[in-house]
Length: 293
Image (cartoon, rainbow, N blue to C red):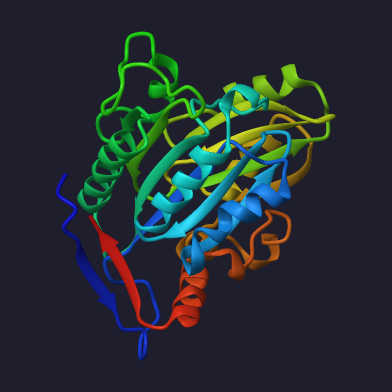
């Protein structure tokens, strides 16, 4: 395997905005209940770790990372420590490292994300023996979940699940927003009905039981068209809302679309943008290197 590396050095001395060729990686790990384990996993990411969001009912954590290097360290640690056979949670999953999307930020392209995706899948299947399913322009993540192990074989790696790690869904995509809305009504059937009513080309939705509450769990796949405010209002047309939850980060442009007076209602803030966390990471580590394999 060719492990030659090209180092892209970003000088943050005069301009700390992430406008150069930078990728984000939003790693979904099937562990959300043991803080000590999550702390150990996060320690492998260093200053590339921008955000962690955990949910004990989903039994899932989302690690938002800068670049393409920390995801490999995190994946090794998760595959070593976690066992899918012991996992229970309301969120669908195929593996302990369930979803690894590479996201093109301003200054990079979808082609850059696809190259990083394919490189990671080759590495994970070869170095760790974990089969990898690709998603992106070829197919969507929901399509992978529906067809994996039935009429869809892994794109890389062995043809059967890893004994403890399962499989990894490795993607390349533009920026999206993961967003949850909790309903006042605790009826799961109602949550699923609302999810079905609002689902569309720019919004994916599931109704899920979360403890003694229910939520409409959404991916806003075109947040410039359907952002958190539009998603909230769509749910509110059909059910009374008890609360909201942003999973991970949004871009500054998505935040700017929302009137400031709605930020608290929608669980948004300037500190929870990709750009603000990227600037913080740059300040912490000085000259910033992104490794592209």
